[in-house]
Length: 390
Image 1 (tube, one colour):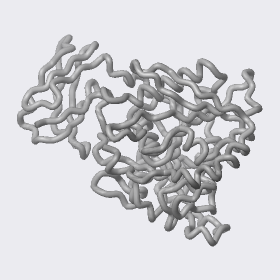
Image 2 (cartoon, rainbow, N blue to C red):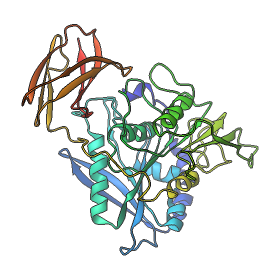
Image 3 (spheres, one colour):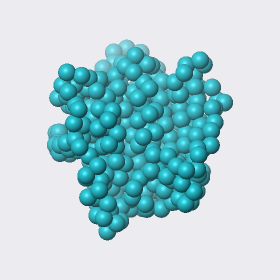
Image 4 (cartoon, helix red, strand yellow):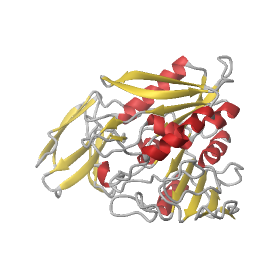
């Protein structure tokens, strides 16, 4: 569970309460607290509407996900996008994660069965709901987040991405057990990470990729030139205990940077530019301002979505028993044409084509070693298709 990976509390409430009045005064728009019914559970969110929002003008939407143990209010105040939204005119939504078995709010980036909580479904339903209620440019929906929220950014972009134009992850990488990432389109990505991060290690560990490897994955998947445009960020605050380097990666002659990376030398598990200092927090950049600068360059016509058939609800498929020993059954509400099984490293360990009009099959997996595996049916990665071989 995430408790092993994101054990650091993001907020120490005493200091947080000291800066709370200032942050509340810095906004001039309106925050609406609401909820939607998702998978028979009411899921809450905070929506920030800037004062210049008009129903006659389509505006971008940014989803901002909190870290493990944190919550929507803390993420709203910690990242402090409100003054930027007030000027730029975009809507900002801060969804609330459900609690795990330890009682801590989290995002299910493939770490627990979706029967426990289906966050991919919730986030996509939230996007649809807000588009139906506000004049949002559906081609300019972006996602950002911190730590566990950053992991969820990458997860959504890889496996559940019909609606998100670009992502920006702060101190959140990839879990090693994810299957091969296949977003089906170019997904512009900005990553920010401190080299002294004690919670999500910069160089990774047995459970997660490092920051450099994460960036390299997106460079490859987006077809970017591997040689970056590089600059050392001016050290405008020499007392913050850190410096920053900036890497930008492009596709051919496209003037827009498709992948960007801010390497925060000696930076901790923090949001650069934040007024709330919880460790070595770089003040040479403002992460929120850089994220919006990155997002705003992309329009609805950039990198159109060619993913046409992703399933977020998984009500159409059943896989049982799980865990299993020798046989697993797969039932789908459409014809099963092929099934592949991959291990945690993404290696295909079993594959079969099916002939005829079958929507129910049994698989003999006695030859597989014990462990966790992923199924892909008809080349589609349904979110529920993860099983354990005992």
